[in-house]
View 1 (cartoon, rainbow, N blue to C red):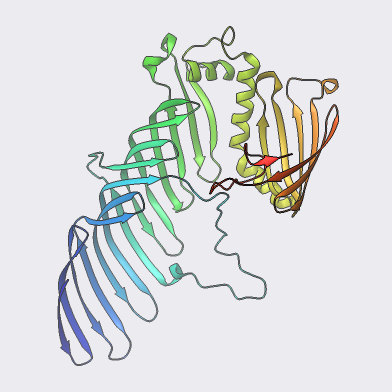
View 2 (cartoon, rainbow, N blue to C red):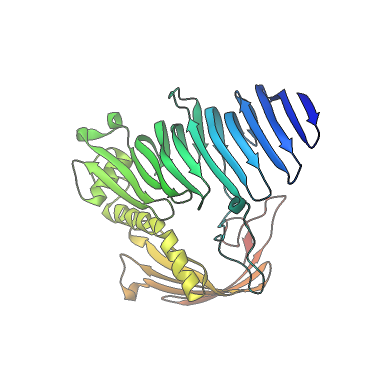
Length: 373
């Protein structure tokens, strides 16, 4: 880092050069402290290298920054010509509270963004060289696009990001991203999704296109199956999974496909279920499916007290006389000791003790190899 500073009474001018990673940059500006502290900065850089965990990003900024006692003004451009971003996992149930949530009896905290007036154009692989790559949760894709980020009067974004080339692993298939776009036209955390992922046409019979479509706001998108030409959902799923439209005579029968469709629909309603649970005061309320084929059950479960969990399940393809309904109560006696009562065709009482072997700590007592009756 080399910086030249010229002092002139209650002010100073400076200019200099530096390296960030392998990228060169310049920092020029002035400081005036005659009446109040005023700072003007100009930051430019070429492919600053930033490494974080398994990710590597190159950033080229061209920014003007003005600081005063009242605010921070930032304007300019940030270009991201290269990135290798890998996200392995997110913390379970990691949900950030709204900015307007604060503890009772305490004044609302002032967010840093309230004092920052930013207007920045962020471009990602503008020339579509496929050098910005994302690997996250089964998605491998190259990205391109641009978003204008503003902080006043609220944090907003305007623009779009596109998937130029991508694949997504779902339902045991390596699906091709045919259409992939994230549109920003308002709050930065509420983009609009438009994604279509299809099975490889070369591995699909009858010239059928079968895929999954995700569209709508990112916090509650609509997820659906589609095909060209159109057909019923069970046959659509058969083409997506097997590349052919046959429902019988194989490893999966019609009930199996129907059960998978039920699970597919329940996974799409996770956000709504969570909101209902919060309204009723039930923690971790969730809908899920268990079993396979004709033994499939739809279950709803949640915590009605800190140490008491209730679960209700009903068989989708069985009648009441065959034990299609099930009610279960699980009471946590100690941190590793559970008592569970299940009422179905018969009533059972089980005592579970959870323990760990080595350094592998299970998430709950239901995991294989971590409980003992």
